[in-house]
Length: 471
Image 1 (tube, helix red, strand yellow):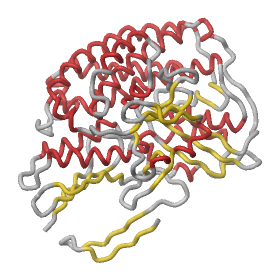
Image 2 (cartoon, helix red, strand yellow):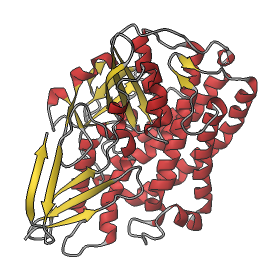
Image 3 (cartoon, rainbow, N blue to C red):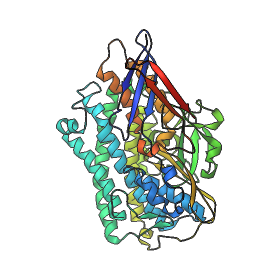
Image 4 (cartoon, rainbow, N blue to C red):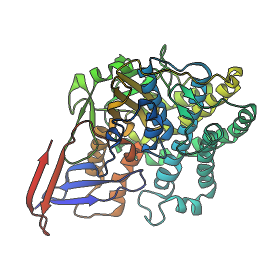
């Protein structure tokens, strides 16, 4: 008789989800699935609203990814206005985007993932958290809190609030940088770099103790998708062209944001609120690809900054298929972010007071694409002749990774889970492969038109009594 193991909820991630593991008659794993159990309908909330309200509204999707959503939303709205924000306004937006990446990566690495590495996958779950890290490794805990604080602090200096600021608007930003703000940001950067370099040092050594996990956790061939600079294969978080490489890192697609629907399809399954994007030329579900820090470092030729490029060269010697290396990629991107912020803040043009353009709706639709900390973020809006929203489609970073997360869960469960002798550590490893992707489920659970839903009625002994399927 087959049995089912349910991990509910998946811990140390942003949002609500569960994992189900189906065992066969011998107690071995037959299948496993990652279920996203929450739903947020921002694509419907916006209908009927003026398009220029979208950055403020969409920024409320998530408290962690606020800046990312505001930037993608603003770019989509500016496409509707037939305006492209350049110059100082673009530079200021890039600074807060890098700062957002810093605070988000610090949260993911130190607060959510590091307990597995520093305390052990099999350690006491009551201690396997940030408080356990504070007790066993206080300096590392302080580094994580401080690095996140620096990222949030830069956002607050420019945008007046750490979370849900109103500074990013359609056409640019609401206020320029002052000399005092410039000095304050520059003073923060040396400490941030010191923390990142110290963390890179101990984490690269720690990875050597987890060689088995590196060889198992989400380690399979896929394609990788990310933005690159408009003219060369250099890391780009704000705006660029979309590049996809295959599992051997050979380019298979290079396209503009307005062409994304020619390359990316979206499927739904009845057992999750999270959509399943796929690479159209390969079909569903074969068109699996990954986004985010690991994908970005696999897609680019250079980070664009010298210190991060040194780390990138070393990163190239590691397993580029293993999702465990998302964690290392985050630290390398943090180093790049600090270097990039310094370069932007030291540019004399950064104090230019002209930071906003004004226009009305000049097109029926607009698309914005940026790189959120977790990966490629797409906002696609449609408006009527009065500039009122008639539809929106969001493909969020975590959504792009859905097929890969599910495959990673199956792979890890089959390696570690023994239904005849179950331990908490086995199940934690299955959760840990999800934490490698750092999913943000509040951001990602959206629908376009109608979603598939599967309702089941079961008896106390788990017998299926009735079911309803929609979609």
